[in-house]
Image (cartoon, rainbow, N blue to C red; front, side):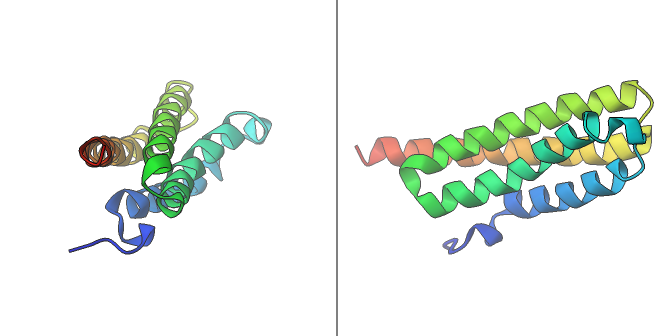
Length: 124
């Protein structure tokens, strides 16, 4: 089955769900973190599906680069979420659920990157 839209990609959909979960947990973060940790966590989360979508629409050559940016944002989010858990701002249960989703997305992104890189190499 051929993918005809970024909206059909599992990583995009999981990324979109991740953003909604991030917004839900950060809504109760301390107000003094609104322009610090809360803002940074939200930006990193939004960057994941946004870069998957933008890269897909730009085409094969740029797609891999955008997938790598999404991967970097996932790693950044993982770090920030771990920090928020360690600072007791994020509960262990919320962390576990969201971090598990980040892991799934990162595995999918690695697979997409590998597939696209092999496809580009084969066309040269």
